[in-house]
Amino acid sequence: MNKSQIRNQLTLRQLNANDIEEFNELLRYAFQVTEKDLLHFGWDNAEIKQSKYPILQNAYVLGWFNKNKLISQIALYPMQMNIYNKIFKMGGITGVATYPEYSGIGLMADLMKEILSTMRTNKQSISCLYPYSIPYYRSRGWEIISDKMTFSMADHQVPKVPKVQGMIQRVECDNDDLIKLYDKFARQTHGCLIRDKLAWDEYWRWDVEHEVVAIYYDTNNNPTGYIIYLLENDVFKIKEMIYLNKEAQYGIWGYINAHQSMFDKIKGANYSNHNLAFLLEDGHIKETTKPYIMARIVDVEQFLKDYPFDSINFDTTICFIVSDPLLDWNKKAFILHFKSNTISLELNNLETRKYDNEIVIDIQTLTTMLLGYKRPLYLRQIGRLDANDQAIDILEEIIPEGKAYFSDYF
Image 1 (cartoon, rainbow, N blue to C red):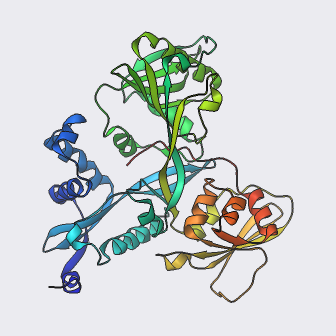
Image 2 (image 1 turned 60 degrees about the vertical axis):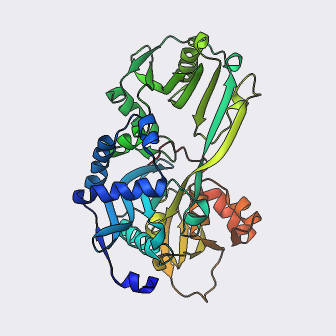
């Protein structure tokens, strides 16, 4: 039997709780999660199976079946994220997997088109995922929007900070102050995921049992910063550190300093997209930067209507000529009219028409540009978009400054 014949006997449907065994089996095979891995993270088979039930209950999971055997799947989480202080509905993609004997016949491409169509119906105009292969997702319209920066410093390089009047308190991982503090941080920080229960569950899914959560409280007992860490083998490992102000930042570093007899070095993750070394007195530390989260605009029309462009003090028009490898509804001319501090959007399908201030751009580049990962002028310099000087000047003025902070994994 050839692949086209196999394709004809497959069926496409949404997964439910009855499919948990096959859902888990395909994930384990595709990502090669071993028994040893599960034990390291404190899981056993029964627990990992149980942990997947919320996904099938709260997410939209679509799969191809061959005679009731699941062979390819994709999961969509209903999420929200902050884009320049405006909350957008976001579709979180995870669980992308196909058994290798069924590769090469377009199953995943069809699943992606279906899941993106579902997002469009749900008004989820942006989608995010953690890539197992950047080229694979790039070819399907996703692009890098944030980095994960890891660092390592010796104990004598820990910054010496001023004393503060507040105090640190260790709490449980489901502490209400922790949840409220992160939510406040996320709603004022570009790129952040707005964590509901499902997102928090994913945040903790692969953590070992002994991680510690410590919250900084100011003198009015307001929580203004936290650190999540693990002390192990003389290493202070920082999972995440956030703070709302300098006082909380000082308070957390002071707390780390109080452990100095217990570690030889600090290792940690930094999602701010700014180098830590520049902030330290002794900046001769090891830092590495790796691409972390990819995103794609699902519905350009809806996204541009909602996007918080910076205001300009003159009337003008720009036109995005967009290409998209998967979605026909994005292959249009999107004309934005800026007039008297108002923005209106016009769509046109006539490819032969010429517009003032044209920007010829693919969906990947449009996404990374509007999310702030790379600026318009740089993107033109490296050949990722085509636009004249005036169009670039306008883009540089109307696109807000700031890179995305995204610390979640799903």
